[in-house]
Image 1 (cartoon, helix red, strand yellow):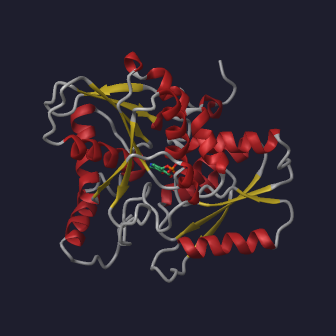
Image 2 (cartoon, rainbow, N blue to C red; image 1 turned 90 degrees about the horizontal axis):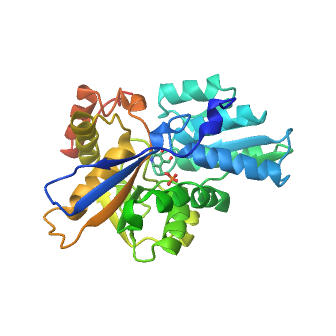
Image 3 (cartoon, rainbow, N blue to C red; image 1 turned 90 degrees about the vertical axis):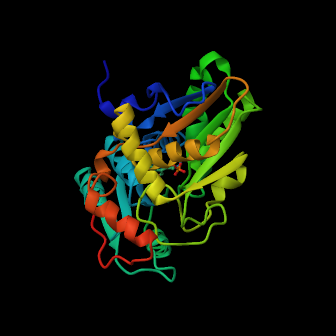
Length: 328
Ligand SMILES: Cc1ncc(COP(=O)(O)O)c(C=O)c1O
């Protein structure tokens, strides 16, 4: 018996996933959307706040601040409330209404950035706002998921450990993970390389993200990708990168639902598409264990990935037709 669902973070289900006709390809997936607020980011939110409180870096009067328009904002608002901490979440006008509602309903103060930055996105202006607030507020702590080592340590100590324990026959050949702040891949890769030094860590990114040197371009699906390279990635151990398109992400999300009954979020589709791309036409000579991380649920993408009109808009955009409005 547990006294609050938020204490049920981690120990997510591991499933085996039949993919393609290659008999030696064994794909397993960690379903991170079984975390309490619906994503892998619960692990970071819970771990970071516990460490900060236990080590007295913050106290019950500290205000927490973070720039996040997605899963991390939702997770932090829940765990900050559980711990009685004030939380300011800086979002922007592209934030999904459902995420904004969840963040507000869980007691966070929401500041919404509406002016685009010099790159046409909102990240730089969100970070500028965070800096302004931090510089003018006493007893405030900026979580800073892109640079805070605690973000990676959260995954080293939880998801990384679970993957090492659960991989069948203790044989891990490949591990595929989506990247945004870089916390998941940094922490998990560090742990996995200790136990399985020969396992290949594959980073999954989307077209339009600059994390692995790609050209910046408008991206529509939230979750992975970034318009800056997170400093936390300097200590990650990455062997290879697979970049997928938003169309491939959509196709894979729909395939996961139709063939595997998995109603998964965008980055799960990106990871699935990346595994397909990587092993396309390969003849594996011996059984190969591939682990992937499915980071969040499909519900929050009902107006996007699972909406036919929205998907048409993405198809047109890829063909060079700019949308006049972006439905959310
Ligand atoms: C859906 C989804 N997938 C993957 C990630 C990547 O996690 P990380 O920020 O640890 O790189 C995120 C991060 O917010 C996410 O929301």
